[in-house]
Length: 56
Image (cartoon, rainbow, N blue to C red):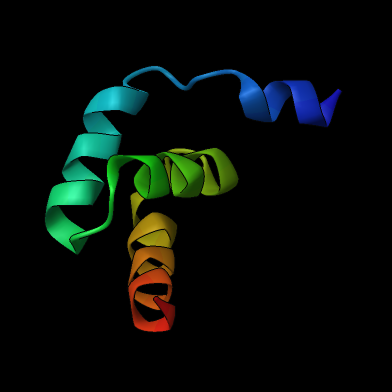
């Protein structure tokens, strides 16, 4: 059940993904991955984006 819930797009996911991609210099797909993993918690997404960018 949890796996199915992860695949369901969040409300406003596209706009949030665009915002994250622009702010963190990640691709849109990378931003969407972070949203799927962390939900709509912007603080966690931004922290993960910094780590993601540092690793890549």
